Length: 158
Image 1 (cartoon, rainbow, N blue to C red):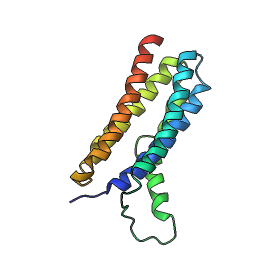
Image 2: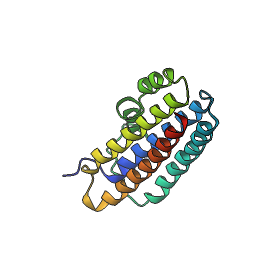
Image 3: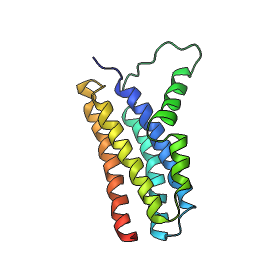
């Protein structure tokens, strides 16, 4: 039995991408290395683009929204879940940003966020119907592509 629909997972994914874009935009101000600034800018743009793409690609997925006591209650729950329990908790972001002192530490933090995102998507894949696994796989591929870009930059910055 599926616990979540792909639509719910996509809501989570949109929030993850939004938080990722915010991190990259903020981290640009913290690093001195120009290559890192450029890649972080590109990744911030890609995160925003991917969030829009996710909404477009998965627009046909029927979302299972439980009864709400007020409009938007469930969406607010999903956002709070992502912010406080999954990849980009405010505490984790604050702690990670406080430890960024150079390009290497910023890239390391970004790599950890990407790995956390990949792990999240792999974990929830089993919670959606098999016919929707390919949609989750697309998200995993996207995160892996970002991970590779960051890892390649990390080699150059050392």
